[in-house]
Length: 162
Image (cartoon, rainbow, N blue to C red):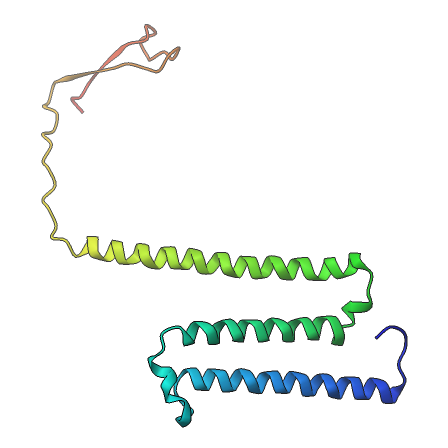
């Protein structure tokens, strides 16, 4: 896309791009249906444990390719100066990082919730009884360093008779 294109060239470019995006989307749909066992001839994939990981990696790769194609060709980011490209692309990368971080945080809280639920299922224990202060007893309070109490000597006695 270096330079200007004629109307016919740009129309051909757009339809070629739409065809490429549609073909990749169809491949993604095929892989998704095949990995879940909805395509009758591919039932052998049900017993293979690593197929869902492979399909997941392929879907992520195809989606990233489509995003790259849309941003760089349809949004004309390929022909922009580097500063503008970075201004648009860096927040997008930070957003992807934030989504990954939120998934990790959610996974932690999900695991933590299971621990709390197991703890809540334990039988309740009786709280230890603490004898209240007897009427007329005295408590001696010592302040922090340099702090004075009401009597001005740094140590005070208070009655509990209230």
